[in-house]
Length: 212
Image 1 (spheres, one colour):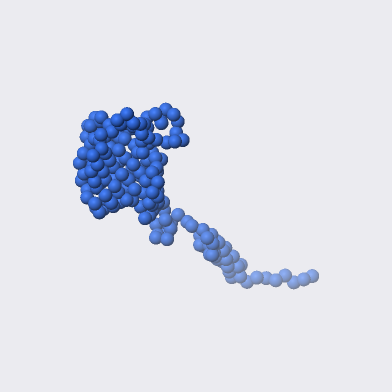
Image 2 (cartoon, one colour):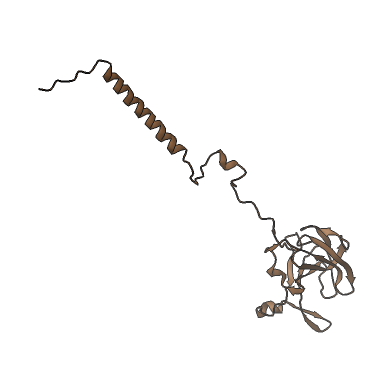
């Protein structure tokens, strides 16, 4: 018969203490590993999200701007449209100007109102010409970025001079009249893109590159 080993009284408590200590160390190590992963591309919602390296919202792109209408009052309306060769017949009929028994295709848009209204620049730009025409009235021409030129005719008063720098929405004149219409408060507006006259309606409220 084999002789049984008899453990000393302090051995068992020591074994239990070591087992508990090993368990506590294992739980702590596992918890730390889960909380602080290494070399992983994970972004947590923490103080780091407010840092300079992680944007928390979209920033507006200032490289593009929208073309605004050349007036501010809401009671301004269109009297004559730009003549579009590919437009519908009904709108083409509203784009014909009669003067001294001669019919002409409108090269811009005629805005009218029952009362005088301020005329504003549709974009930032530089005034390249201010002049007066016997038929068209006072005229302001402004060069903008992206090869755009806007022309404001039929002005009753002009508030800018040649070579002035203007901002979008700045008042450049007041509505007036011309010899092609019976309206007392009118603006004939034209827009050129890269030297070609275009329909302003295709540009209003549209974004363009803010480049020269």
